[in-house]
View 1: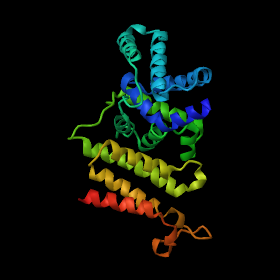
View 2: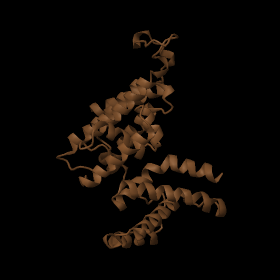
View 3: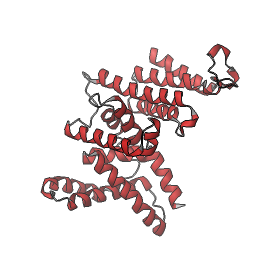
View 4: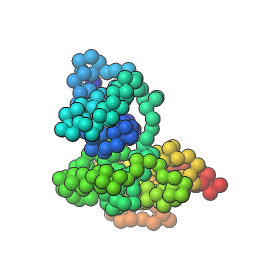
Amino acid sequence: MTKATLTRVMQEDRGRLLAALISRLGDFQRAEDALQEAAASALVHWGRAGVPASPTGWLLRAALRKAKDGYRRDATLSRHREAVAALAEEEAADPDPQTIPDDRLRLIFTCCHPALEEKSRIALTLRSLCGLTTPQVAAVFLDAAPTMGQRLSRAKAKIAAARIPYAVPGPEDLPDRLNSVLTTVYLIFTAGYAQGPQAGTDLCAEAIFLARLLVQLAPDEAEVEAALALLLLTHARRKARTGVNGQTLPPARQDRSLWSQEELDEGQHLLDRAIA
């Protein structure tokens, strides 16, 4: 029961927790390590004392403590005194899922920064926001897991070295940066569309999740709404796009009874709203 609850919470809230930690720590790797250590502690503590009323808040508090302990173990502690003090204040608070700020929009823009090469943007987005494991991300690109691990590490190091801001860009930079984000989401979708269900990870569903997240976090952005509409209108025909022999069928030859009317309706509604 404890493991199942932890798995569910990490699947549903990992992106929000990681974004909140990166916002506080300013360090991708330290945030990931702290969250992983907090999850390991949860298995022990929840198994002994029961699942807390606010599992997400518990994980955030535990991760902040783990990060603070990591700073204290650091040989260059003097550089981190301010960080330790700030984390001590965080620990004194009582965060719960309703009060944890949602910093995922900032995380999306950081992962998809144009300074990162395209493959790294996709990999970092899948790892950080979708919660895919490094081997799962490697499988998307037909890479070995150690190779993908090195790519992810280099991307995080470049973000730190180049001081890429963990922020939503201002109005003057938003169009170009938003295009980079939407391109990354679209490339994730097209990878899933090309690979099909045999890939082991439903990349089309992950891309739609990211597009929905963008609509939620950046409402009234017509281009974001139109992007989600495009994905939904394409995904709605997934069950009908191949024939009995596996050949690709154009829409005119597809069995329309297999199309998802719910996704078609939602996509059309989003498109109408974006045009308006």
